[in-house]
Image (cartoon, rainbow over all chains, first blue to last red; front, side, top):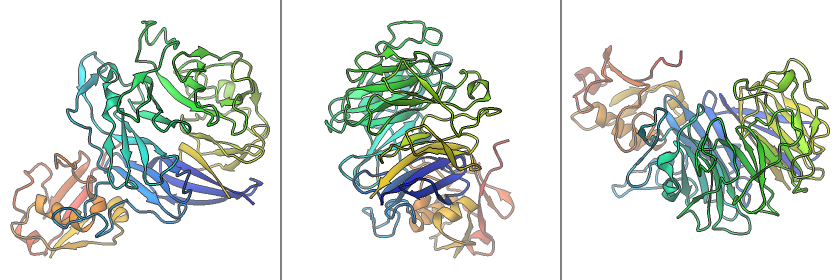
Length: 388
Length: 98
């Protein structure tokens, strides 16, 4: 029988939740890296026991952890004596060395002046679809890094910052590459999204990038209707069977693109509010998508204290509230952008974590929900692995 | 032997308990102690000082013989009591966060 492994990053450590394919009874392991912020954990699609994790601290900076046994044990890649010897014979600890390539450069600051890029942390790790030693890392301040040696060393794909990076300006949550989508049909095509800068695409493996924000409207935050960058994209998602179709949860508005981001159209439809953070796609139905509407940019919690996931089976515009098993009064948590994921069982399982420390699971595509755990630290990210 | 006390989170990261003991060539300075520490425990690279600039991270402090040496030049010679191992060199996570 298949097994499900849910990787949960929280403000105070990582947790691994496991169940059989029925997804009714769960075991909770953790905290791993107790006391550290775990922004994101994600497993390799080709070697599911290889998991990369981003561990950060305001005191001690960025750490990259890797497990090769499904999260039972961890190591900082390249830190074992003799594993990566430098010219002087010393082992080099460079798995957390994220250095911007070439001239650091500047981006737009809150007061309109230019401000130098400063590395803060890794928000998102995206393992390659074909090579377990290759992974991408989305950084704050916004940049994309790549490893080809299992996380021992990282180098920047600096072409991204040449896509009008001098005009990017951090929002209240910072300026980070928070979404990385790899095209399963075209190894050279990658999509990324950056808060307060927008969505971007490369078609040459990361050498050059273009903004893909046409059709986005941000009339209060960005008065210029033709602005190529500066849109506060919260999340983008794709179904692997249709990599040219993208869905987006923007600061306000839910949108879709049917041409790999060349043009976006709003599909907020009958949502009670179209502000939110995560968006995801059903594993077997490419037109079935999920969002969690949040009251507003000023009040980051569900409308009316009711935690509702909204599902559209029509690729947007027509939405239904999913409430069975979710709190429908006095609920004032948020669901962050990286905190929703799906499994690939039949029927598809949907998972999300909250800033209140709950991780909810639906084994039936969202019809019913149950909390797997209720009292974790604030959840930053949720990823799901479907194991044989 | 130089004795170094790490903050809790760096001890767990380096998988050590209690003090760390290091061989450091003379002259013993903040810089040379951290060089030896990072060589022995490469996972600590970047957590105490920047990889490239070697500047101390903002919320990390250095103490020796009850003196705060955080703002001293990193090549300042450490007290004899540190060099002899009579006293430990303390790396501390600063109180911060409100």
